[in-house]
Image (cartoon, rainbow, N blue to C red; front, side, top):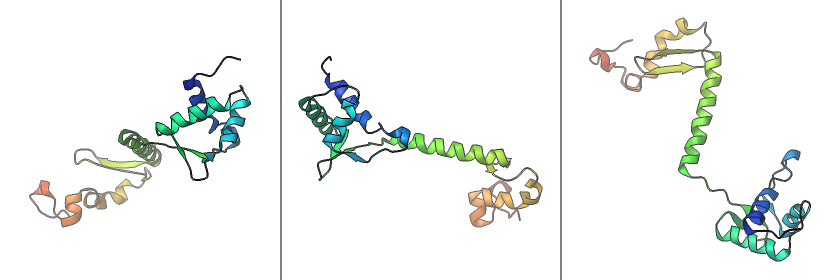
Length: 150
């Protein structure tokens, strides 16, 4: 068997956390012996190589060593990643609501999703005051010179 390179060993360690994903299990932490056992199922690795790779991952902040000496994944969420997740979740919510129906006034800049297609006429008189934050607070419509629109 060829020797392990450090990048290979580090990748195998990271992959060991997801080795039982087919069973629906992703452990929060793994002990050294568990990581070694998972990796050795596919290819032998020396304890020294495994220890060095674990130490490097801990030093770089990709893993944390818990008080009980087990290793935990250290997931760092960058601001861009969080924004991408929020945008994707919002898009899914909008798509789900739009499949039911929607009403909108693009000129005024508002859309309401999730209203069945047969309901807009019944709800339309109530929507401008609920969609325009200025008119919703003060009861005044700035496009009408501050007059109320109710």
